[in-house]
Image (cartoon, rainbow, N blue to C red; front, side):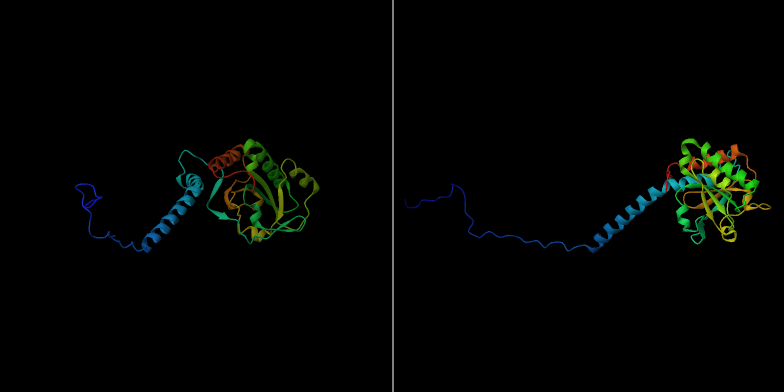
Length: 234
């Protein structure tokens, strides 16, 4: 048929070809990448702060806030004195031991020469009894005896301190040990028990000839204050 039109009635066909509008793509924003990096670092620092918060809080509570109602029997060492990495330590066998090997546990420390007089024996006995009296918390505490000379300890003493959880016995020169631990005025190292925290910080000194009940109470307070971040074992 002549004059046939395939278009729908009333429709019009554009006589111009289709055209596409091309928009330019945005250029990469370098400052945006830097911003994402900065945010990531802040998040990492925030995570570290959350992990450290329990340690910081417990020490602030114990060392800084100090409520008037709390009476310490033992003397707090402020600031705590960190175990020197250069402290020369030897086992009784003669083998060297790195000071870092003492970190990771609360320590009750006795210091004396190898002869271990009556004061030393009493301190070692009290050291053992204190740990055992802590009950379920005792596995967070180790016993250490620093011998300050080259003498040979008596077998009876070594047998006594091996009962229960054996004490760690180490030789440490008195002069070097005095760079870390110190007695109260008018006393000697051998007259005290020293408490060291799991980070290797000497932070408490018991009085000479201490009252066992009062000293136990002080140690229990320390264990409670650190319960959120300290666990048994190194």
